Image (cartoon, rainbow over all chains, first blue to last red; front, top):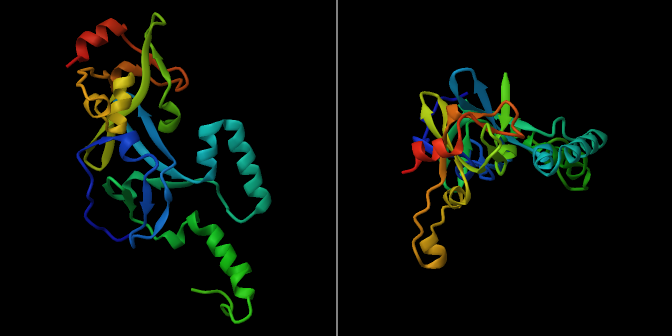
Length: 136
Length: 100
């Protein structure tokens, strides 16, 4: 992980400043939105933000836990995405601005682009005059 | 490790030990403390919703309404059951303590 200087405000209103914000990786590639935020409860200490969550299962959970189960079952059946939740530890959050949250990861190495990778390998690569084999 | 999902906590009704309704959680204030982001207070009520949306009554309706959200310090809210958050003191006591 490349150490870069973090640009985080001293005070945050968690729901307004983080939830549903666009997430970009260290190269400014858009990789989804913040769908969930997990707080760790500590004995005798204030709760702290543990990680951000992204993914279809997290969104489904907001509707109803049963819907989350359905979405997870559907994902397993299709088998493209290995997980319905992508967790970003708080330590990876680099910058929070009113329109986006920048995290210190490479989007291509996360499950965020599982569908794009699957389409590239199973569809685009088989189109005549398309990509020969797997693209890098 | 006990965790709470913030998105599921928002909109939950908070009650005091006597069962009296204090309001719904609409905003959560946090601060940076070293590498961590720690929760300082929970804001309850419709005024908290305005805070979350970044709106003012003056902007919305053209007249100023000086209504402040009910501020609950982190140590006065029991989140062991996130579906039923409970105040650790009476609502009236809290209003006196936190009104600005």
